[in-house]
Every structure is written in C-alpha cells, then in structure tokens.
Length: 113
Figure 1 (cartoon, rainbow, N blue to C red):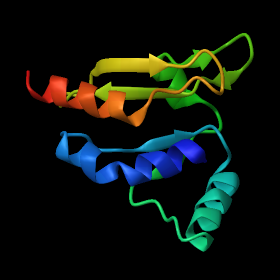
Figure 2 (cartoon, helix red, strand yellow; figure 1 turned 90 degrees about the vertical axis):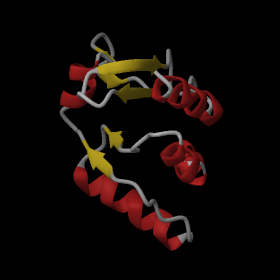
Figure 3 (cartoon, rainbow, N blue to C red; figure 1 turned 90 degrees about the horizontal axis):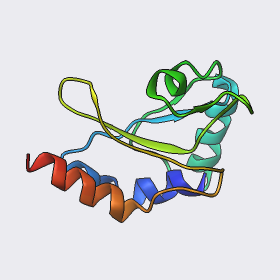
Figure 4 (cartoon, helix red, strand yellow; figure 1 turned 60 degrees about the vertical axis):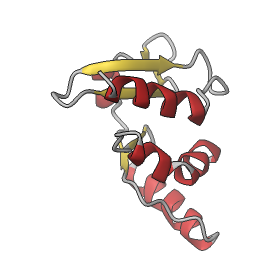
C-alpha cells in the first residue's frame, strides 16, 4: 500500500515523463476493491488503475514471478509504445522496491530515445 501511495504522489511527474501508470496486484478482486476503498476512506484515492491478478498471469508473462514461492515479485515494468518490455525492476523480496525517482529518470531516458 505504501508504494501505491508514493506512486500516486508522483503520478503527475510519471505522466509528464511519458508514463502511463497501471498497478497490478496479486490479490483477489475483492481484496483489491477493499484496498481501494481503504485508500479512498483515508483521503488517498488512486487516480490510476489498480487491477487484480490473483492467478499471477501478468507477473508470469512479464517475468516477475517467483515460481519457487508462488509469489509475484514487487516490480516495476516499463513497456514501450509497441507494448514490448523496455525496462524491468524486480525486487528480490517484498521490501526491495525501486525509488519513484529512479522510475521517473528511466522514463525520461526512454522517452528521449
């Protein structure tokens, strides 16, 4: 949840750097909906989509799935305009997440190409 709040705080900068933000959760749709309601109740609504992927299909397709532990790794994946993976950061554990500044800098670099 903390990362979602931080990404929300940087959403305008992410968009300005050429990014479109979509968050994917390995939680069920009910759990994802509950999280969105909790954020809304705290006055921290998300202005980008948070989608549910309980079968981990997206994380498997994007290469950020830990098969040995059956978990989605915390990750940021940047797709180019053609939908191909241009950059990936996959954490080694639940605490290993990239800084938002790194994401924005990477978007700026990729947009300049």
